[in-house]
Image 1: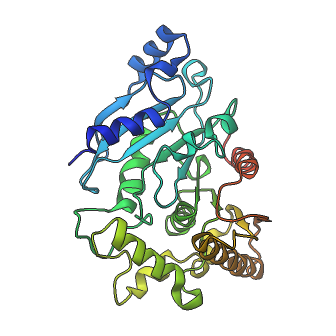
Image 2 (image 1 turned 60 degrees about the horizontal axis):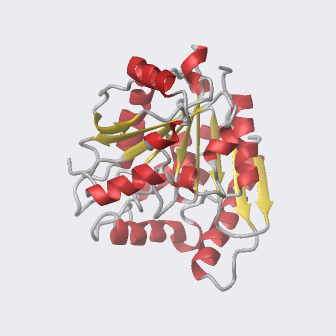
Length: 329
């Protein structure tokens, strides 16, 4: 597998807050814990780069046959992980389009370290590609881009083999922003036995509405930024694949899960990207919520002023709800 160019890789490592300079004292303790519990290869993943010196944020770059470059992952550990001996629930947290595995850490409006400080939860933040759409695409002109395979078949068992997490339904949650919110909704339904809680922060929940606006956007963005002209859903569309991924067509797969939805009600009218994205999010989530209500499936939803971005206070509220739903550490 090819790696990122060193300049790109080094920027991501530094941006991800995983440099040794951030160990903040207690270096001997952290180094001992790292040596005793260092992650190993497995589940089709080979570690090509790592930094386990930070007390909480452990960084890895992983070679995999599923992706033609080496994706990164940050694993955010609880404050007491190295001393407690406890097993913890885990949240898989997915970034949006044109973001990467560091974004929830480096964006001060998300501040995942801050909102999880003192919380008994492991947070796994993997790469999902600039426009990978948490999918195995219909085609690719840039080598393998099988993000679904990487996340579900490789990363999840690798995490459970290397960290003290509950390898069970009630031990896992999935959440994300924008494209990542869609990925969370998709994975929670398609792999309904994997995740007890699902959250979508400005994530689209309906693929076919408005002439398939979200499908068209997934195809256009993936062709331009991910697949070298190929698309996630194909042209003409792979209808069965869309139905398998479409939250509004998978209602029963959400029964008995915690469901958390956030949408903005007032995108910036001078920003066409913000308007298109959040209007689709809002309309799609309203459609999804109405169908959930009709099926008698409980959910928690928030419509908030503003556009297409993560609302830190609701991210923190979501984290508390996830911890409340999952098995206790």
